[in-house]
Image (cartoon, rainbow, N blue to C red):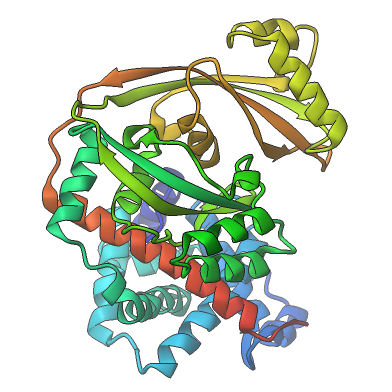
Amino acid sequence: MPMISHKFLTRLVASAAFGLALSTATVGPTFAQSAFSPAVTVNDRVVTHYEIEQRALLLSLMNTPGDKRKVAKEQLIEDRLKQEAAEIIGIMPSEEGIQAGLVEFSKRTNLKPEDLIKALEAEGVSEQTLRAFLIAELSWRGVIQSRFAGRVQISEAEIDRAIASNSGAGGINVLLSEIVIPVTPQTNDQVQSLALQISEIRSQTEFEAAAVRYSQASTKDQGGKIDWISITKLPAPLRPMIMGLAQSEVTPPISLPNSVALFQMRGMQETGGSSPSYSAIDYAAYYLPGGRSAETLQLAKELRDRVDTCDDLYGEAYGQSKDVLDRQAVAPSKVPRDYALELAKLDENEISTSLTRPTSAGGQALVVLMLCGRTAVTGEEVSREDVASALRSQRYESYSNGYLEQLRADALIYEK
């Protein structure tokens, strides 16, 4: 369930305390006539303008970033796909299940369910809007568990490896291949569908061919092959997923900024010692306008030849916009996932030029990404059940995202 903002909580409490009534002053005849007309059809299932406005208001109260109406429309399209998938296999949340979902949602506002409903209505959000929101998510939960439960069984060995991967115990190194496929809003559906197909590959030869054909990573010419790497250098959320792979197995699609990634297991070994976990990653990102054009890549090469350490980048950035250089020393969980994956391949003061970022002018900037250093710490005690739960959640989420994109790619969606 989504998090509830402090601002929203304050407004809800105020609304509940003062018993504010829903105002209808702005609802004129024109809105009343058009509110329930179709805005979008999804496989003959209608999304109305009223539903979009209601969901947008709910998202606003939940402090959801971005264009609320656009996000609302996209969510409601996905809700129709989720509901259709649930109905096909006979899944429908019981009233008891809906009430349990409402209780779970209400806990985030420290209000009882009935008080939350009253407060939402005082802000203009109907109870039916909240129920529809919960029903779609609960139905989808059932679909994913029914469809993928067989793929998320967690063994004791996987838990052991996951704990080792986070603590550094055993000094585990992995040999991976990668495919990183660029994504734009126009290609998102096709890329997600393609990534789901690649995730089913169990041949290293086929994966290498797919890497050469589709990947944008610097490893594409080597069939996506990455050298041996310590598991503790990878982003923490990915470690259990990687450690759970059998030989030649591929991860579910992993969403990154502007791309989707997949990894294939080619080998695993224990080094005999322990590998450190890290409390902080120090890195620098220097942005060159022009994306991956030949001219920009040449500038990046020249920059790489001039600098020896991250501190040298300050001289390169002197006299330019402050946005040209971003230096961070943050917890590993705060590093953007695509940056973290590139940094995992680097030693101190090494550079990657595999990534891009959108610019404010609407173009692309090549990211000259440099690892400045890592701060090591001793791993903490972790609960085996917490690890198993995290493994299951991550796998369910990956399969959920991939399956939803597949449904969307196959759907007939028309906007009015």
